[in-house]
Length: 459
Image (tube, rainbow, N blue to C red; front, side):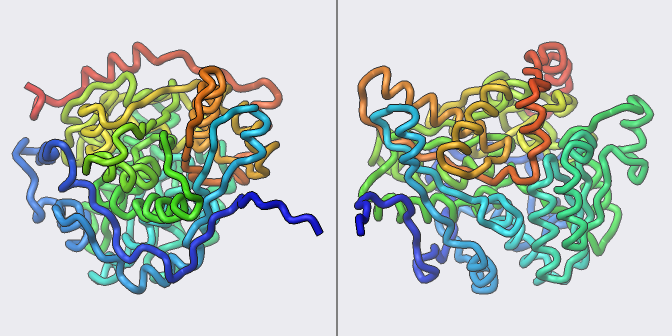
C-alpha cells in the first residue's frame, strides 16, 4: 500500500486544549481609550454596565490580566467540537501553482457551524451563574443568533433574537436553527420596541441593520430586570473568548513545524479576526516574529476599517449603548443588503481598531463577487463550502498566495475559515446565476453616517 507522507490535518487531543483565554489588553502598544456613558459622556464604570451584563463578563471586559481561566463546565462543552482542526490546503496550493504554503483553521465543526459558540457558551454560563432567566441579542446572518440559541438550550436560558430583516428573508434556515434550539426570532426592525417603531415610522421598508437590531435587543434587556443582553462580537470579553482559536492554532502550527508569515481573517465586528490573530500578535508585540503580517478583510459595501473614521461612536443606531473609540462608519450608516450579513456592522472592536491605528495590523476590502469566486475555487479544491463571510478571508489568502507566485517567494499563510456555508446555498445560487451585484461604495450613506458621530470624546 502506498502511503503519502504529507500531513494534511493537524489535530490536538482534548487534553491539549487551552485552559485559559489570552487577554491582549495589557500587551497593547497604548492603553485603550475608556468607554463613555451615553448620557454623561464620562468614563464608564462597572455599575453602568450591570443592567446589561453579568458582573463576571463586566470584569473580563475591563480586565488587565493577561490570562483568564476557562471554567471547567465551559471546557466540557467546548469538547463537543474543540479542539478544532487545522488543515494544510495542498489542493488549493496546487491549483494556484504557488510556492506559498496555505493553512486554515476550520471553525465550521461547531454545532452552530461557526466560531460563535466559542463566546456564546461562556456568556450563557456566566449569565446562568448569576441567575439570569433570559438573554436578548441581535444577529446579522444568523451565526451569532444560532450560537446563542444553542448555548441557551444547554443552560436552560430563554433566548430572544432580533435578526436583521434582509438576512431573516435571505437565510430562513438560520432562523429555523435558532427556533429548533428554542429561541424566539424577530425580523428587525420590529413593532415590539420603541426603537423599532421609530425606525419603521421613518422607513416602513427598512431592511434593517445590526445597529438597529442591537438597539432593539438592548431596549428589551434594559426594560426587563430578569433579562440581560449578549453581543457576539466587538466587545473585549468576546475577543477574549475567541482567542482559543489562535491558541490552538499556535500549537498546531508547531506540530506542522511552521509559523505564519501572514494571518488572515474576515472582519465584521472583529471576533474571528481577534480569535485567530491575537495569540500570534502577542509574539509580535513581545519582540519576536516581527515580520508577521495580520490582515483583516471586510466587504467593500461596509468598509469600516478601510473607509471609516477612528472616533467615539455608539454601538447601536438608537444611541443606547456606551460610546467606544473605534473605526466607524457612523451609527446611522445602513449598508447594502449583501449576502455576507455578518460583515455589515458600522463599527469595529475597540481593540482591533487600536491595533489598526497603531499599524500593528492592516485591512483591505473586497466586493462580494470576487469573494464568491474564491469560495467556489476553495470548495472545488478543499471540499468545504465556506460561509459568505469566510469567503473574504479565502480571497485574501488566495491573493497572498498569488503574490508569492508572482514574486517567486516562499510564504506561509494562515487564515481562519470561520464557518461553513451549508445554510447559504441560496447565495451561491444567486452568484452562479449572475444575480449578485457589487454594491458601489455607499459614499452618501457613509457621509450621512459620519455626520451622526456624537460630540462626546470627538472634540
